[in-house]
Image 1 (cartoon, rainbow, N blue to C red):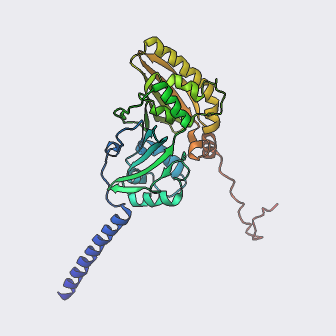
Image 2 (cartoon, one colour):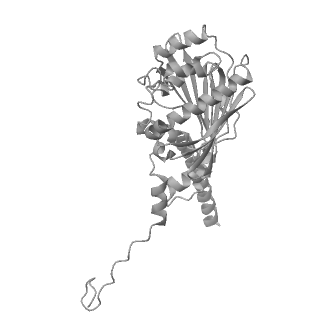
Image 3 (tube, one colour):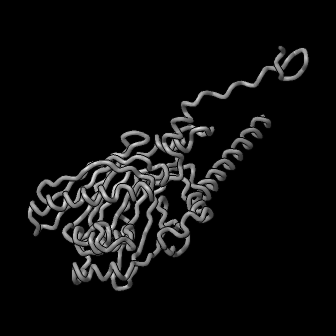
Length: 339
């Protein structure tokens, strides 16, 4: 009877210890209980000219193929650890020649681990000249990690905004529609979004080049917004959609002319995009009313992710297995074949 009581006490003590251990593990690593799904709109700044969202779940197969292949980790682990959502917001301030940047991460599990990993990896250093303050992700609340910073805006681009848009009054932000692997919306109504575009352009090109900022401004000042979204059609191909809404005072003929100009610029920029980013972009845009729609396919994006080209991956997957080493010679005791 005493032995049963002792065993019962020991089992209760063990159960208490397991509960305490689980609480400690959850508090330190956040890997046992799933964190709540929280939309990025709860942490977006009030006057964003750029909003961008990534849905990691829609990249599950791509991640499993390129990052888990050859490891002992099962693909199912991704359903356990992949964040719900990642978003980026940019808010240019023409008075300070700078733009505030906020990175939002809604984690499923492991927020403390992700926070420490980003700090130790140094991945945040030197990203587009952004100064992060503080220089690490902050746990805002359970399931939400935030990273805030600022980046400089070229005075030349601010001058172009003043020249072509006049006095800038930020409007209510445009929202994302959701449901895609990647989505971006750029607000050009007040011109602030143009300053972000110029960061991707080459100011050293000839001034009369269609891709020089002083020429691109004539296209973008006629647009109210640009939406871009992408989804995997295969592990090596992205379907990319563009939707550019013209300003309401334009005519349908203006939209057709802008679509023609956009196709021309894309054709001239295709080689530079491939050279700088490894991307191969194919497709065209057309106008319907005051909306310009583009349908594109993108391949070769592995370079951006530091992965081997798709061709190399396919060759490695289909390469013949190396020949087996020769069997030991039972009479001589070595691997040489008898002749």
